[in-house]
Image 1 (cartoon, rainbow, N blue to C red):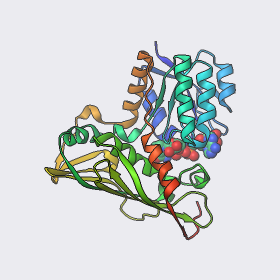
Image 2 (cartoon, rainbow, N blue to C red):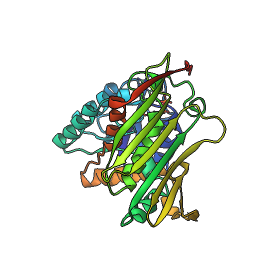
Image 3 (cartoon, helix red, strand yellow):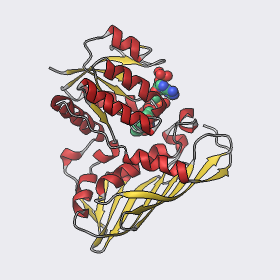
Image 4 (cartoon, rainbow, N blue to C red):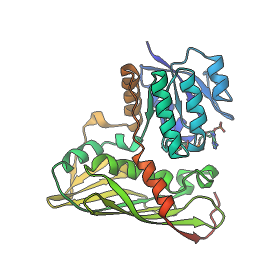
Length: 309
Ligand code: NAP
């Protein structure tokens, strides 16, 4: 029996990735949507999660694709109604909300899958395996994209809680925390806030591993021309480069061919969600979000030119 799923927040990522991934996965049936201003042809649509849960009680699961500021209330309502929950990244608006959702899922015996889609990029598993047993000596993350191109008209990203450039930057941190054997902390951060906005448009992080090795990260939303989502990690026995957001791996300059089964981040995300629901397990790892929160806690603030979405 396919899991009946309610999709929440019908915007760019729901249309680009979630709906096609669901359409290709017989383990799910898109049975309802909840979105204030949008819907999906042929699928019963509601303007709130509460209305959807009340009208379609047979739903097994919901998948939340709204901006992070709207995750907590929707996820809490769904868990309390006995549904499994999948959360887009960033997982929530505050760190405490994630802990409470995890506890609520356990209380109701339901799954909460707090996703990091970039961890499902084709090169990530091989990068993690290659790094095991090697000694890291340094690293750089370069995550630079044009916000006008990738987030057209999205004011929420620059509102309080929208995370600004950390909305994509957290993807890099999700990959870093997945592939490294050792933990990292934020040693220093510099955040650039447009004078008219509540969230940073650029950030520099000085991350340190437990062994004191520096990994420097540069995030920038003002990139024109070539877009860059690269992680380079140097060890005493070779270097790796993950490019295209984790999709391409090279070791010592030589491309590593990814297994075809690893293609498609969102089909793999939903496959994992189905496994977790069947096993009655949750998957929550909010270390990337903690690193972002820590950057806000200790970051130096710079004011830069106004930005208009
Ligand atoms: P989006 O195009 O703005 O769509 C999100 C939808 O959520 C909106 O269209 C809106 O639909 C609904 N919504 C509910 N509460 C909202 C609020 N307080 N503010 C704004 N919209 C609200 O955004 P998106 O690009 O799909 O991104 C959504 C989430 O997916 C983000 O957390 C983002 O990090 C993640 N994501 C995005 C991408 C990407 O390429 N864009 C890639 C991976 C992950 P209604 O008005 O109909 O309610």
